[in-house]
Amino acid sequence: MKILVTGGKGQLASSIKDISKQFDTYSFFFPSSKELDITNKNQVIEFFKERNIEFCVNCAAYTAVDKAEEEVQKTIQVNEIGAKNLAEVCKKHDTTLIHISTDFVFDGRKQSPYLEDDVTNPLGVYGKTKLNGEKHISTILKKHVIIRTSWLYSQYGNNFLKTMLRLASTRDEISVVNDQIGTPTYAGDLAEIVMLFVTRDIIKYGIYHYSNEGIASWYDFAKTIFDESNIKTLIKPILTIDYPTPAKRPSYSVLNSSKISEELDIKIPHWKTSLKKAVISLSS
Image (cartoon, rainbow, N blue to C red):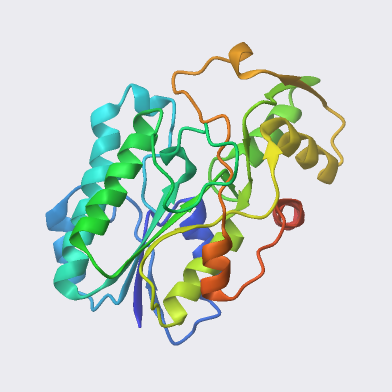
């Protein structure tokens, strides 16, 4: 089996690469965005033409939420056109597409964990383009799995965990928002979920939610990072209104992951349990 993982240098692709060594009968391709630009359909066509790809895992995305408000066209190209290109080429080659999406497709007004069929209403460019990418895929390609996830972090790439550790090394006090509620999700856990879809016969295509179990604010997340890392830097809780950003965030974006748990027959770990693993990985 040949498996293409786009966005090969990102944190999820890097996490998939870590566990790919367990699957020695599979061939994996992890091209960077420079090696495979999904916004260039001809490049995608050529890549597929030369290889018999059975699964494509799309980890490529424009994820700089605030910068997306300025770089609208670039965000559209990656999150919408790139997803559309992959869906069209996957259809031609009878390839199954596993596409990673986001909790930012919701507006955060629900106040109870979001289900896959809840009404979407993204607040900013990033969420809107990711939702449009989902729509392209579901319209074009039957053999697709869209996994919406939230607050992704790992020992790789740029993410909240690494930002907090970096800030703690230079500051005595850090202010962190306490009124945005969601669930931190360890990319290592999501990578295992992706590989379960690859290695098992997928019966039910469509949209799934996956995050770790539990609920937290960004303040809770930061405080637990410091507790696990034995860092004494003071953390001050603040309100979103006190930390204005170009992009508006959903105030509540907890995902209900019961559908994916039942479909794959798995027990999803609590975010604090997985955070311990990530901190150990960073320190080793």
